[in-house]
Image (cartoon, rainbow, N blue to C red):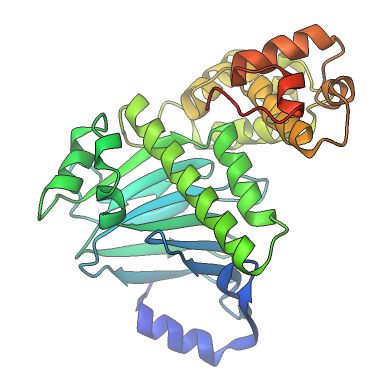
Length: 343
């Protein structure tokens, strides 16, 4: 299959463009672009934030097969990628020789986050008809990272070298699965109700929080290649199981029913949650319930007992115990406006 340079692809894309709409200064973003061509349909959000971080969100569906050559310049950026999961999301294949410890051909997987530093390198991104993927990307200026050096002295040596060296080595880490807190923040970024200066301030705070969570996750686990003990079709089924739990917080299926529903054995389902999300099935469900409960409590429109019922707890004491275990305060204290004691 022919490999198109970025300039070639841009030209062909323009020639086959069916429509384009651009909104400037929208919801805190510098611009939001929606367009459709014979190649793909895309919605693209971009913001250049004062913190030294560029935020962009790409939501794209491919109509044709093609390979695109991407040439990275010498910009001093640390790039974070957060791939959202969903029924229609697919994995993203990349050919990029020249990264120590990483195969020349690798796959970035939905539901995972990646951290990379790839200046002065070429990569081929592979797209297939029917592919649909949604990714949030942060490009963080290294000077922004250096401002927080005293807080980052426990990071892996590779990242320390990135901060300290004049010519740091390239790297590409699979940091791990998107945690419940990461998913909550991403949804808050995607769906916030603010405009103008308030929206900008909100995005600044959420982006820094998301980056901090990724770096914290990096300190707690050894960066590694994508786990390969699970078959690709089983990975998709485990993500399907995760989405089912997220949609049924009030009345989730049992583990055995969930496994049957997605066509897996219980052992594979349990192992998959451990490998992909670094938690158990019950642990994931509980964390998601608590994250949702906290949003309800901060909204202050419902009572604690009503919120407990909404997230699937029939016993208020069990709900309060789980909430305090995760956040360090009781639901009543959260409702009263007390700050969380735990991340």
